[in-house]
Amino acid sequence: MEMKYHPPGQTIAAISTAQAPGAVGIVRISGPEAQQVADRVFVSAHGKRLVDLPGYRALYGHVYGKDGEIDEAIALNFRAPASFTGENVVELSCHGGIYVTRSLLKAVLEGGAVPAGPGEFTRRAFLNGKLGLTEAESVMEIIGAAGQQAAKAALAGHDGALEKKIIGVRNTLTTLAAHLDAWADYPEDDIPQVTSEEIRTSLASAKEELEKLLRSFEAGRAMREGVETVIAGRPNVGKSTLMNLLAGCERSIVTQYAGTTRDVVEDTVLLGGIPLRLADTAGIRSTEDPVEKIGVERAYERIRSAQLIFAVFDSSAELDDSDRKLTEALAGTPCIAVVNKSDLPQKINMEYIRQHYNHIVILSAASGKGLEDLERETAKVLDTANIDPAEGMLLTERQRDTARRALDCVEEAQAALESGMTFDAVTVSVEAAVSVLLELTGEQATEAVVDSVFHNFCVGK
Image (cartoon, rainbow, N blue to C red; front, side, top):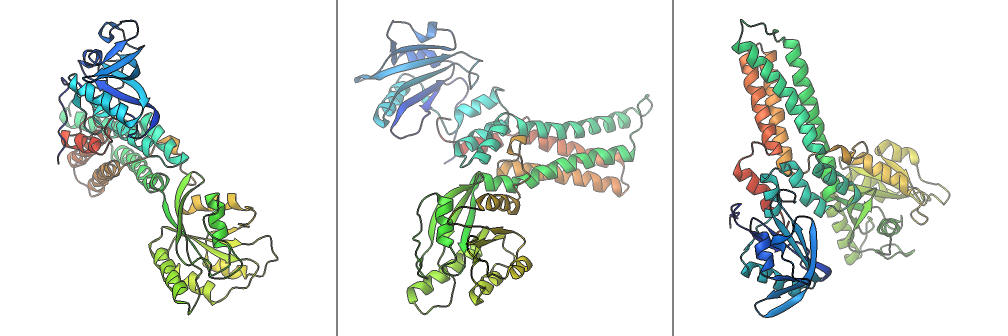
């Protein structure tokens, strides 16, 4: 069902904390009648009313519904435009029980507010100029961050790092378009002629910055969404020990007997701030055991769908056919050769490993020695090693698609220039790129684009 947002004249309300038991539950009210609505359910201990209170003040009291007292509460008062939404806002904080918080919201709605839609508070903040569209999109990225790197990237986006990069590219193109227009419209005035080399330099600069942003998207996706990672190898090379090391607890059973792991054991771990959706698979070998055989088949299935493989080898043993078969199966898949049991005398043919793997880590999963090396190599394989999330990066599919369209326009301008077309043709493509970048920041985004962004938000944010 299509979500219809409320006009600015209506006062909206929603629960802004998790719908689960907790210490505190917050009902947020925003709109021109926020204080009046809140005063219908909140009675302060000293008889003060929120409509008479200036912004950035708090009152202690109790909240009431039609059936009587609901709970004691704190009312935080904000006045437009100095609030998150840019409107009058009241936040009523009560005890965080599900029933209590929902009862308070019901009373607020009965007091004259309407239920807020998904992301409607943040949407109003955007429409009231409190933050840009890319900054607004970062709000949900902060909420959903699964690791330190993702949180840094989202916070940088919320602080405007991405918007500043986009504005920098846009300014380069706007200056170029203005110069081209002025020179074309007023040829008899004393305006310096635009040279092909100047155009070429500006377009190359814009293209480079947009390509950097697009390259950072996939690395950022790994930080945000995690990476499907499989631990694979023949029996008894230490796959389960590695799984337990990364998980920080005993997730997989470890014994000296081959074939102990017969199914896929899964967990999500953080390695260098990057979430890995980790799967410990059955040892790969030829077997007649029907149950173990199914486990081996499942291991190969997970290998084929994985985004990253930790191919584990036993440093203290010579390579066998199972090791070589695994190596063949990994051709073309991002992987790291983990040469385990480094604390034992080495018998493995390291030359073979170096010939077939670009990323190699010497590790003792039992002691944890070499874990930092695995962290570094993982960052290299996922191309996150040289990414600084604090510098700003594309966070959403909408942002990537829009940046891609802007790059297409820049490349069209370059092609027009190199093919000898008139500068008018170049100007058309440059102005199209500027328009797309204005859509990216939200300055020229259509209502449909804005609605689609906030439709993915949780209610109450």
